[in-house]
Amino acid sequence: MRRLLDAGPQSIGNGPARGRFAPSPTGPLHFGSLVAALASFLEARRCGGEWLLRIEDLDTPRSVPGATDAILRALDRHGLHWDGPVWYQSQRREGYEAALERLSRAGLAYPCTCTRRELATLSIHASDGGPIYPGHCRDGIRQPGRPAAIRLRVTDTPLAFQDAVQGSYAQDLEREVGDFVIRRTDGLFAYQLAVVVDDAAQGITQIVRGGDLLDSTPRQIYLQTLLGLPTPAYAHLPVAVDRRGHKLGKQTGAAPLDLDKPGLALMAALRFLGQNPPFELGGAPILAWACTHWRLERVPPIPARRWDPRRAREPAPDGLTQAIELLDLER
Image (cartoon, rainbow, N blue to C red):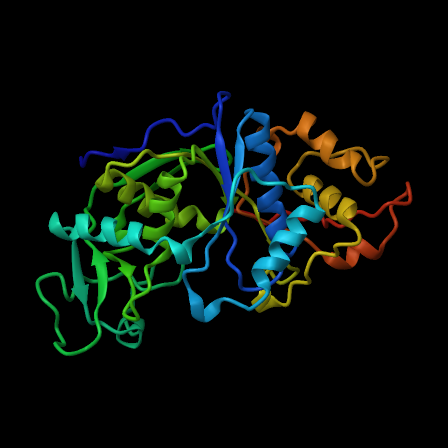
């Protein structure tokens, strides 16, 4: 039996912590963004730690002018005040270059000229829908002269970690993902490498984020291991989805947060996260209540949860609103 590469205990600890929220400036924050920001903020504060903010603006073609300022305003309006200066990935290229150089010198990274169109014809796909890379360029590029991405070699050793919300999770990178891109053909560094380098540079000890990134976590732990970086504790939250089961986002027409009603949004997010604040709370007391009563173990250990914004127009018995449709998706 193959040895299991175990990242060790991954429960969120009780000591001093450093958490973070790392949105991409592709548009204003919506309800799903608030869920991730609020949970990461509250868990860091529960542990007596810091909560940092990082803008993941590496993918410049997708960045929307003015989105960063809108994100900062929305967080401030909801009382989610970060510690220290805001980090911007667009200013961190030297760190990514150094990590790539280290991996290349160790023979762990190689150029690949396979195109997305070519790989899309493969019949085997990963759980995230992308093709499982078959290793075409592992022993040398197949199409000299083409622009090349840089891929990371993976092994067939299964990697496992304990998620503080979703429980035990394991993945065989070679069989389920394949060698993955760490620098794109356009020269931009890929998310998987950048997030690992930045989490280590910022001293992040706990990562609380949406469950859509659960599948990416073994790749990040693998990179941490190769680069000799610490592995934070992870907690992956249920993803907020619409009535059709689609993740809330710009592509699905998710409405931006209403900055005139932060209390209602916080109430809805807390209930979505299983915290069940009393309905009589309103305005500023909601966040104060949450800082005192937050418990990560109350978050439902499910991959997704439906949220229907139309319910926000329906009055609850106490005159507030209940914006959650309590219909949980099956695993």
